[in-house]
Amino acid sequence: MKNDLFIISIAMMVLLLFSAYRAALPQEEKTPVIVGFPENYFNDLDIRDARAAIEVWGNNLTLLKPTRFYLQTILFSDLQNLEEIYRHDKIDLLFLPVLDYLKIKNKIAIEPVVCGGWDQEYGDSFLLVVNKASGITNLAELQNKELIISADGSDELMNYWLEVQLRKNNLPAMTSFFNKTTHVNKGNQALLPVFFNQKTACLIKRNIYTTLNKLNPQIQEKLFIIIESPLYIRDVFCINSAITSKNRDLISDIIMTIDKDAAGKQILLLFKRQTILPYKPEYIYNVETLLQDYKKLQLPPR
Image 1 (tube, rainbow, N blue to C red):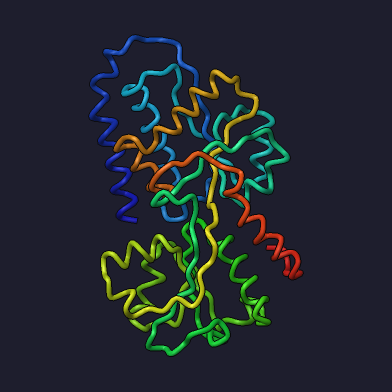
Image 2 (tube, rainbow, N blue to C red; image 1 turned 120 degrees about the vertical axis):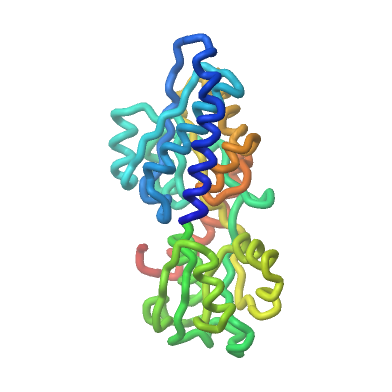
């Protein structure tokens, strides 16, 4: 939480730094670009702070790279709420977790244009990790043990993947297999208890594991990865299909500049991403395959 507040502070400082120049800019007609995102995405941050930081970044972008647009944000509570908003209000850009995108892509007119990345990868892989001292080397040996899941915006996708792994190994569902399952908001809250042998296992993203290992190389020495998932795209930025081609190009250009300046990079950290990558249809394949496997195994709807 302190890190997120620091990010907000940096963004606000950028606003103050450039606000002195605002009065010198010629007054002109500007069109709002409405950015929609789920209000429950930032589970460890006040949504008002995230909303303010995004608008601060967008408004300062017009000072660094003048355009006839400025950013506004709109929140939706769930997909039904999003459909209602989409019918009555204009949304130009839409940020969606990948599972939500797959559920709604045929119901509203949107096109994915970019996705968030880390180390130039388009998505995350998941690791099931134990302490080597536990002697555990396979999934079956975790039965009746405690699992910590680093939620961090991907917990639903993680759950799908782990449920499929359990069923493919002829093991019970998560609720019956593990003695206790705990969700935490940050990766270190999941990994460190396993590192110190206080908890048995954790489910964590590869990029978080790699980052923590760089800070403390003993992590790799003491921990054992039981299984690793394929790479899964986590989220997509979509554009309203009804936008004119001229405005589409301008707005797409705005999106692609997010990781090009300090304030934009701080915004990406709010989304737990490091860079922006152009969306490719093949990025969605692993997620669709996972959902098909889940359905074939006749697992209950999540």
